[in-house]
Image (cartoon, rainbow, N blue to C red; front, side):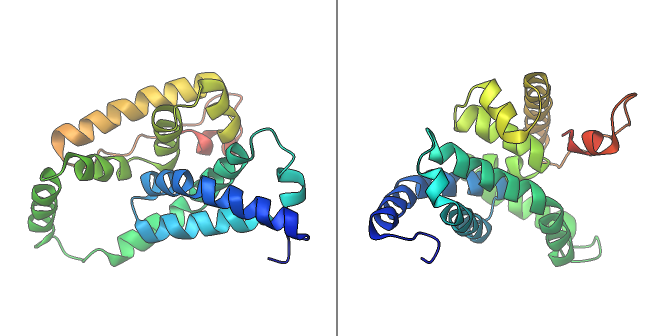
Length: 195
């Protein structure tokens, strides 16, 4: 690993990677619902951490830094993954209802699989808030820091995400996307960051 210069730093990085990989993988999987994407995200996260290891190793919470990188990668690539998923779905509505019914029937066998499917139906930012807040058990302020938003935004996003998740679980259908409206005094980038 060319970014980690000396043997002692390399051992520290390898120990860090071994310790953090399971947690990062679970977070990546909950965010994407895809094993391959989660593995790729963890690898990219470790590459980015390794490039800055001399600085990261002296941080109080290097795992939190790595988790923030992973979440940013997921949010940055969410649109690309959605387009790829849409392109891979069969065209034409004839078999779609049968496919959805079969998928729901298979997912009903395992509550966890059904939950993961429902979680995958939410927008990436809402998934991020739910995963970080409730599965990683992070305080609101830390989630806000990771996502670069206010604590109030985390709370309102968590509330909306939980409601949408409940709707998806009870209906088995993907909810209609929430309309994004421009708020007075908000820049366009702030509106798009809302989930």
